[in-house]
Length: 410
Length: 227
Image 1 (tube, each protein chain N blue to C red):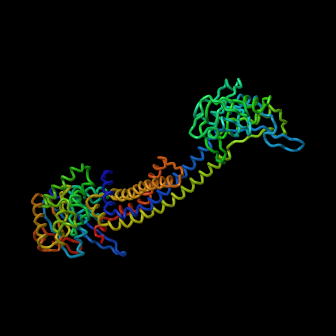
Image 2 (spheres, each protein chain N blue to C red; image 1 turned 120 degrees about the vertical axis):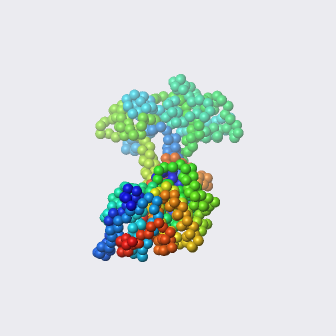
């Protein structure tokens, strides 16, 4: 039989019993709607967390100078001044998986003054590679260059929070204006784009960036070439373990660390957070699959039940169709298409409700949601397959009826 | 009557049912030739085997033994799909209870056998069905559903449906059994017209009055043709 004709015949049969068809599909509708809505919310949350994580930077590993050991009292990371500019250069040169490096010095609790206002913040002395590694564009103005870096120019770039605290509301910082950092004038080259807080609540925009040497020589008054941290970005998070080993080997060799001694530097990366996010996403996936399976089985059984009733009710119709020339497979297809339509249209309605529910929740609770087409397509395919799986038995029963008995059925 | 111009030719047809370990022959060695254009009434008491014979004639059932030729083709050993095709193309059925699809228009009821034959455009199907409904005098009621039609009208829709594939044989099982005498007479008049046009009509009936209108009457008893 011609598929279009089959479809029309099935649509007509279902339309004749509208309320029953709708109630039969209800299981599928509710199941698909729940799964679509939950997936939208879950994906939205995952993407939000991933965005926050990637706002920290590009496959970053952080190196800290080591702990100083004074008569048995250990000072903690950073108390020993043994990470040098040259270490950073060596890492970039000798570790194949290291893409770029940014040696960093910190001037904590630095008072800055602009006009009548003042503010205390942390100044970071970095190299221009910082901007790309932390994925942190300048929203207004420019970042400092390699030339500024080499000449030790007194220039800086301000974080959004700093600007907010130095400039009265409604006013803007004039271009190339000067601020005083510990009473030394620095020319402001630009303002960093707002980055927001980290997942642990630290305001990333409350900072000032300036060339490494300017910060070290002028603010830290440090004549040596040591740094507080080295930011390292590696080519791929999958190579994290290899990259860590390379970095450790290079630094231990450069610092002449004895084979039995501990590392004289600290190394941190975002493995734990990445793992946490992916484990949450995984639990979500398992939960969703479970809910989807249960609701689809329940919905499918509902469809099978009604299809069996329908076959019994329409026994005489089946007998008549056979008498006028319907083959067994024509009858099989007729009932199978009805079952697929019930579940498929149920799936479509469910998708509609699910997307609607996700949007309502997103508006009411300000939750981020993400609806991707592949999920919707998958939901539709799964719903239609449910129709096939649970419709095949009733359809098979219908097709095996004996036309003589079916015609006489009362 | 020579075999060559027979539309239907039965040879030693037997249908044996196994009931409770006992073999019961519902049809017990029937040989019959029906010529093209003939109008045959099959009569007999309940249990005489006339319904079983009609089922075999209509290719709804297969004989246990014997041969059955329709227009020279032996259909007794056809498989189910081939039998379905024979029913679709060569045989039209008219039932006592009309057997129309409920809540479905007369037009669609008549079109239904066309779904299972060669592929036709919707317009062609509509046209064929409309022509036949006009032929049986229901040209004004194309879109009425069975619930909106009288018994006689429903049976005429059923006859139009039986004719839609231009079969050579029309099988009618008590076609006037559920009708009042006037409607019954109308249906019989229609049958006479169809017979005059050359279709082979085989009709099972209880009524002597109806049977008398056929050209030939076959009486059955205990699975055999007795007259």
